[in-house]
Length: 281
Image (cartoon, rainbow, N blue to C red; front, top):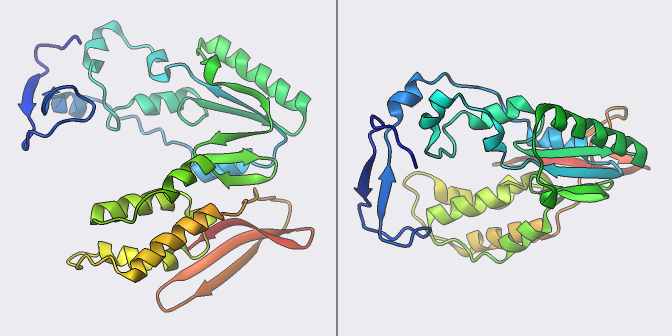
């Protein structure tokens, strides 16, 4: 790694001398102080697309192509005199993700092409590849899929039928033991909450667990909390297929409330049968 001499590079010791799992030696960490550089850098506020909107747009099509950008961060040219400022990786605080999004209307470096007819999808694919060629964007063919009927996008299974949970992720969640700490509860609710649009009355079911997150609340993982934990895992396993909204058809909103929770489901009727689009609570 090439480091500018005024970057403030130093080596500090972990307070508890803990082993870092991804390292082979003890808890020492190489750090570099780029706070002044970050303060002087003009921020790029290009927002990521809304996941729900992307999924709803993709679902319900017959054919898909999923392309993967090859090392997207390394395809943004940097002025040679500024390259020394990017020698350390920053996961969340830098501007590279925004640059990637501004360069292409996709989610990070994943391309999704679709069409209800083979010829339509093929034409869209040709146009997409032409743009990649014109802008010199490289693709990772080993991670790309062409003319398939379904695929995993942003942790969801997309197909003609609609939007489903990713069964691989659900299998991992279903094997988790019940939490024994506040951090464990936050972690589980974060994993389960990623799919809360599939779960009716998510807030009501999870209430015994969310109560334990309140400030100064004693941590007692009661039988009620264990039951809530198991119910959420069961609901994820049985999650329904959500349809993509049809903007040419009327919507139906069903609401319910109790003393401590409100639940809503948005859906539409297909052949006189109510089909859910989104659960909220």
